[in-house]
Amino acid sequence: MSEATSENHSEPVSELGRQTQRYLEELARGGASPHTIESYGTDLKQFLEFLSPPPDPAAIDLLLLRQWLASLHRQELTPVSIRRKLAAVRGLFAFLLRQGVVKINVARLLRTPKAPQKLPEVMTAEQANRLVDAVAAGKLERPYPARDRAIFEVLYGCGLRVSELTGLNLEDIDRAEGWLRVRGKGKKERQTPLPGKAREALERYLAERAVVRGQSAVFLSYRGKRLTRGSVAEIVKLYATCLAEDPALHPHSFRHAYATHLLADGADLRAIQELLGHARLSTTQRYTQVSLTDLMAVYDKAHPKA
Image (cartoon, rainbow, N blue to C red):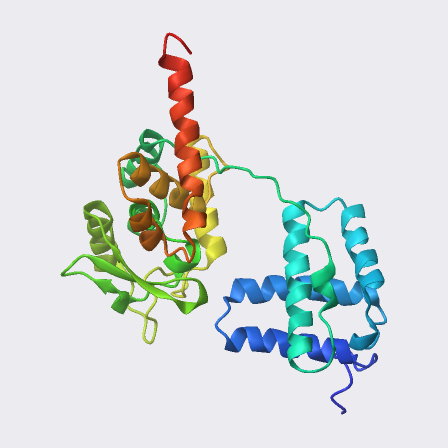
């Protein structure tokens, strides 16, 4: 069977389709996260479907790309979603340019829609601690309460992304010194301090964690497999709904809270950047805006001249 046939053996794979697959493979070799590769793969598949049948890459001009962009607006997608899809297509054309398949990255000529500057909603320190303490108190009957408590303590106590939490391996925990080795975006590693409560919760969980041959993941599912990001999100949502009556909370909510509460208590912005594993300080500075917003709310409520 020829390479030029698709999985259903009926339609030939286009040159653009082959180059798209090569681009995704290059992303994987370059250390892009599985989540990024999956998202780009979905976006580019939809791009190819719009072009169906896909023309030769060199024949794709700015007018055709503008028609594709207009179709996204007609679907009433959010600016954030359109920006991500545009980034995927721009990345593909940058790859095609490097490979000599096209002579210009026409996707760079498309105007990027502005994304609204929306500040993340952040739990107060009291709300975060109340929820984590309620999880620790075992107020919900769950099959793995020690694991669940450790998840919440590490999310809030260390400010990890959910992918970093699920990616933790047993050898990443320095139990003697109280540090975690965290693998962030782009496979960048950093050391994160493990605070007392998170350390205690991890010790309790690890003492009863099932020993699974060949399985190094810290957090396991009931099947003895590495816990997925989706599973952690479901666990957080369950507890947040039942104990805090807030189903909107998700794992990243604790990362926002971690950074904002550190900043409010006087931590240096550069130090917070290192703790969060942000490549750019501008990303961390969002939390300054959140803190200033909270400060103004306190002022408006309490100051007699407000």
